[in-house]
Image (cartoon, rainbow, N blue to C red; front, side, top):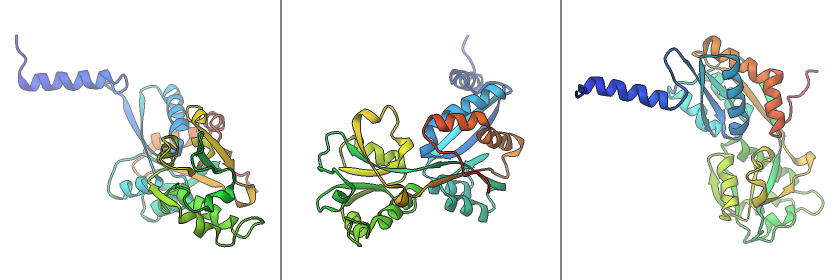
Length: 265
């Protein structure tokens, strides 16, 4: 017996939702907007949260923090916002997209990433300023892009570095990306001789394909990651924020190389 059109569409919808293994009848959905550099850690944290909150399905939107803040401003539905810097969280606060006070839950450091074959013959940080080296960075509006430019500026004038080091290095910029994962991907594909990323984005899957140059601590900006629920996040959004800040959440972050927040004075 043939199904009517409406009945078939209803059945198809049930099959599609059930087929995901996630959204079933009676489940609540929590939507988290999180910086791209949090992809691996937050995916694990989301699974942990689902275990302690049966009946909740966590959905993620991973992108550059500037993209996420703009999406929220334009009406996209998100229950939690986790940014890779204070600037875009403050932007969200000023636009009244945040409920309560944001809390810093993790920190991160920068590293220079090179293809393992090293086609640009970059052996030290000073080599990034050599004409002809192909550099890829995130855009200046992206948190990791802003941190990268701050590091280059801070290195200028140090022993062995010209005062206009940042200008010389940025003259080699061949591409600006929307998030840190895109920077790493271009280096992996040897579309660039070097890029600057967070240490946490050099994952076990990436590590065999690249080599690293460390940026000295005094010139290495420490990225701070704030998190907050949105006005529509309700109790579930607040609960997820609390889980990220808990020992369970911090364990997952530490396992992927994130630094803990600064201790309260």
